Figure 1 (cartoon, one colour):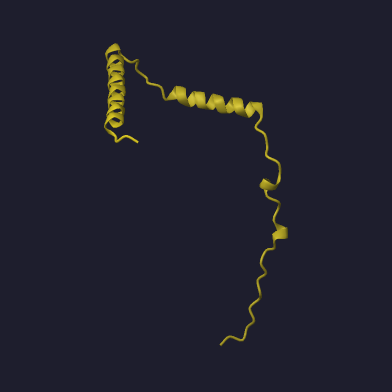
Figure 2 (tube, rainbow, N blue to C red):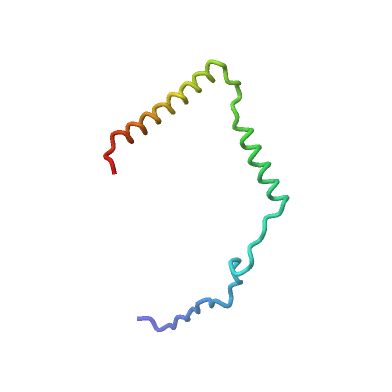
Length: 87
């Protein structure tokens, strides 16, 4: 058994904390900040572009694939509408 007395630690009260930002009015974004954001996004988009130009064959193949995908989607929708039970 211990004969020493341990000090009581006091809890921090709410009065010691500064008020939160949610209590204040929202801060509007300035024009310079919006321009900087747009410029940053444009630079990121530009830096992620393809380094080699797309060939005609590759472009034609891509367009054919897109058209085939759209045709499949239309056929699936048509099948779903014609084979589903009437309401």
